[in-house]
Length: 185
Length: 308
Image (cartoon, rainbow over all chains, first blue to last red; front, side, top):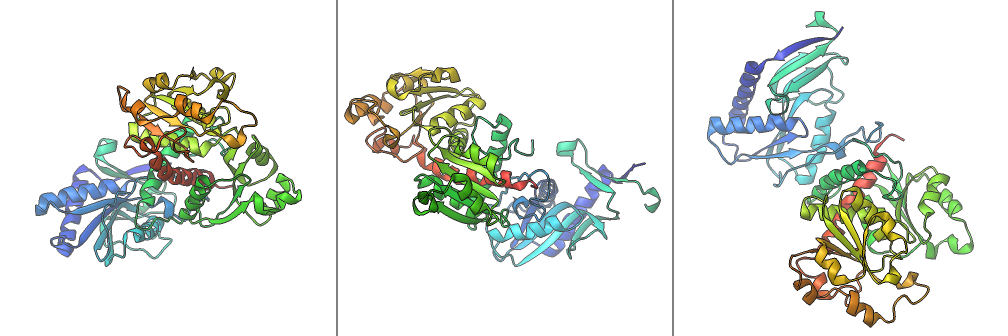
């Protein structure tokens, strides 16, 4: 039977995002050459939360951030019964020579990130790309991709699923895991 | 709704309002893509598309070809004038020969109504109708509606007049179907000889007075006189047509409100529309052309996107 586990409650969620912000500040200081990009659709909620929090902590108002849709670059196109429906990309700046912080909610197989790296090429050659995720599903990667900043690491098997809920759309902040394999946790 | 309800785009009549909405939202994302410094996406890189044009075309052919290339598809072009069609080959044979070269999608323009539908029953590839005789021109109607939607925010409840040679126009028929599905009020206006006899059966208003049509509408879609399809004389002289149905600046300025002016092209400047009007700020003719690429990208993306 499938069991639901809470990986992060509202309080933990808040602390984790704040901690991730401090880690970013440690590496990016004034964010002068840094750009924050959230991956559509659900990475965008995390990136806007991070941007908001960073502004509060640092007082910086000029943080450059955008939204990137990876649909057209995905490798499962024409392999599903329905076409993949794209979301809007909002990047009105060039990322040439910038340090890009790519943000997504859950890192699982790494394929979305691979598509994101490709999609970014249309906006220039970044100096460096870092990856920030709220949840890292360890040992599930199909590609050699690793995050630089992680909210929470979980060990999962393919049949497990993770749901990140956002106050903006789901009514509250929390991270849930659905699994048949309770003993493992 | 995450997929089109059809496997081919043969006409607007066959698709549903939800399909049109899906095409529009996808076209919006492609419009952003074609305004980037690098305008290409790799989505259709494993797809081969044949453009079969059995009738002349500049805009539609270029627009389709550009859309295909922006999606990274492999493209082959075919023009009837320089092909074996003139040696007596049938349409099905021509297309089957092309498909034997592993083509996934066919974009076809043909002088006969129903050619695309016929082909869709004969061959395995996905068919997109790029105009079949005086029947339908679905992608033109989609890009027209998309352009109106972009300018006015919504199509529901809008008054849209299609003015000119309705009888020979595939753009008119596809536009009527498309705009009605999106909730617009549609009027056709032209000389009685250029209005199909039972056009009111489609639920459109019929008007023969240009001024009255312009006063009623929010958007005027001006159509060209299709002399190449006219086997007999439908009006006494071109001069008389211009006097009665040509849109000029004084007439546009005499209206109480600003209306949008559209034209599917090619324009006969000085006939259905004067240069001043075509180049005025109310004209969205070039927006239509730009949107044409995005809308065609969306159509091809959505048709090719599902597992076959």
